[in-house]
Length: 487
Image 1 (tube, rainbow, N blue to C red):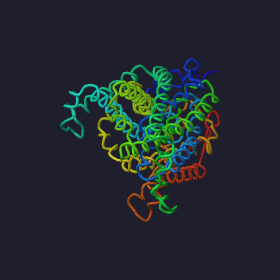
Image 2 (image 1 turned 180 degrees about the vertical axis):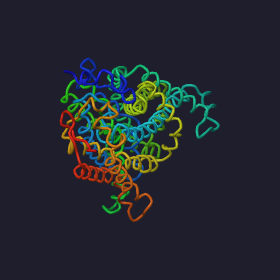
Image 3 (image 1 turned 90 degrees about the horizontal axis):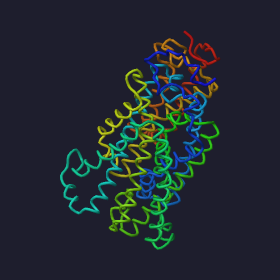
Image 4 (image 1 turned 45 degrees about the horizontal axis):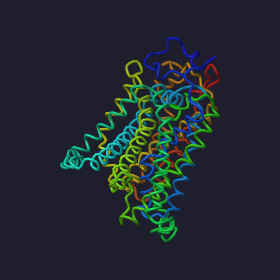
């Protein structure tokens, strides 16, 4: 019997639509290569290169920057795999999975939080994609540079034109659904890989070998001076994919097996990020040698090229790469999350369009104004919101329920996951405690160390508070043995 068949024929429309329903066997089309290409496509993106290059610009040497990124991605792979399991086992997306711990109404809280972060990332990626188009047009058609003048809300006329053009590309792909996403990522991944190889080769050639690149010293002469930069940078690396660590069920619900998604992700994420970040490190180091300053944004770096063929190929590849990660990482999840708010009225496609509009409102070009704003302020701050959500989800599914979920009850407003008026007070309390302790250091200097470890702080606090609450409260069993709060 498929998971889809156990859902009641007429589930509550407030909690159900065809996009939120459990996937059936015919929808299980994602294989090992699908997940491998998903991470290769998403990891080898401009924000990855910027994160790695930003660490060089902040004063790390290549070993320190590369170690920080590899360690962060190995750590974040753990919650990714833990939250992948229910997606494949039960075929449910993230906002439906969140109902098990937060309640049928409470799940909207975390869904909206995750959607807002994704919308911010959608905006950032759209700025990058638009800037690559703008750089190409400026390099090929000199008259286009006349449109670079002026300023409206922080962007020139040419910037707005290219930004909205790239924005429209994203909307087109999402409008055609998840199968189009899978097909696009499958052919985009090899193109993205070639871009990285080309940028790596240029960097080594321009710097006249590896020696000059790898011999650049660190600005941190002692362990004590390095740690204040290393810790928030590591938190930023984890935050980079902390978004996907929550909504990864949106992808693994289409997997043919647990083995496919686990192996695909394990062999995809850390190696792809290690490779892509090394390209970013080498390219930024080369820019310091060739141009005398750290160009941590690859689009700015490629803007120094004047050969039209190289300019076209490189910026085309960046556009493809940026579109791949934007669709995969920043639209799929919020499309489901927003649909979860009103399943009877908001489809997956409509949710994706709403995400795209919210992304405009973030004025994301300001988040890319400097490495400090990008790594510490943007990545570091939102990790304090996402770590607590991960703590509650993992504690509930693995420590409390032991992987057992009563699927039909997820779509019932009066079922075991309705808790108290649709909210699980224990989950809400754990979430608030985790967020407060993770972010309090941003306002209280004596507790800044909690903020530097924001994702870890929030995760551990929320995990423990939720586990203690659920163990202490009265519980009852669902039809399949699932645990929920008693009345």
